[in-house]
Length: 246
Image 1 (tube, rainbow, N blue to C red):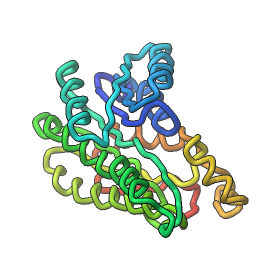
Image 2 (cartoon, helix red, strand yellow; image 1 turned 180 degrees about the vertical axis):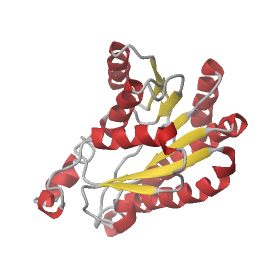
Image 3 (cartoon, helix red, strand yellow; image 1 turned 90 degrees about the vertical axis):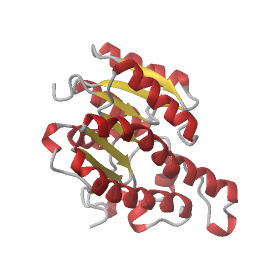
């Protein structure tokens, strides 16, 4: 199993893309920490599913938008296992509205969770990865961060910020054998994107592959980027969108 003996943290791992990534990481042999903020039941269901696969998993509650909570989580996980090999920054929220109707709170909530949260967890884990001289950091961005989307200026700004963060950090950490990459999903069928997909009637016809994506489509790439097969890939933004942004 490609990721045997690896410890992987997935933020926002209790549902959607995060859930699929947790399960696929476990299938590849990793010990998985399922981070969640509020839905303990969903997180424990993911843990149970992974344990049924014969793999080790733990649920860990932390609001990654809070620097103290994020770093405490990282420290506790490192103390338990002695190493952290993979960090998947997946946690994210939406608060959609046209800019003229968007409240300051809606802006701040999305940017703080989706972008500052990536800084918080990555800052916590990089200290250990630098000492290990190895690690994989995978940031979940979005094609919205590449080409924008009406009613999502907060989400687009945060996801575009993740792209810049990824490229800059890849340059900083490359000499330590730490790779940093981002995945930019397109229209993926999840609870969070259901309302957006409903508003985009007929979107499948605009996608060259003529279908919506699945969380597993994203998870398979996350596992590959975590493996030794991807050790010469860093600083890349890889779209999983069925060709929508061609």
